[in-house]
Length: 191
Image 1: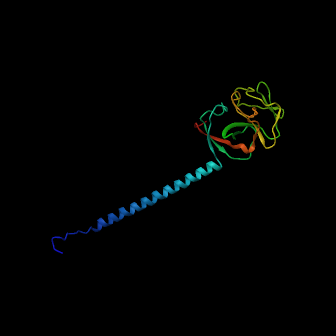
Image 2: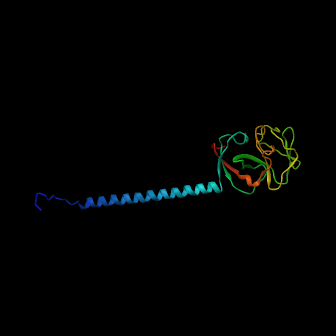
Image 3: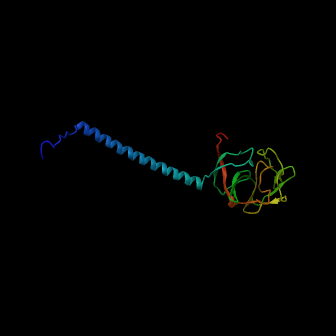
């Protein structure tokens, strides 16, 4: 090879090699940390979806059948449980819809509602501070009504507009239709 075709090649200094090595190591650490963070976030998201689906479903209130207790647009966290008690707020599945109602009668209870909207369970008048306007509302069920085994009697808090167990279309709700019970309200804050 002739001297004209040869190029002079200069080697990098030890400081330049050290700096390039450190930059390469930094990039590798950054990439590992980024991938590790994404993996952790994906696992957390998967666990959150699993918990939300299996134990703590989240729903949004649509309609005014539970006013003044719950309003349209409120976001609630439910707790899936087979244990329930009277006056508990629950979400029921009915004809591919989710309905929020209050449990009034348990299996075996005798529920009665008079023309003024006063509710009695097993002969005892219920104290219902959550109901602002007592009314019989839309009702085609004959009272007194005994709640069959494996079912519950539910009512909305806004009795004049709520479609609930007073209607033979819904009637007493099967316990298997209960999706969950209201655990707490997420939105609006402080609700």
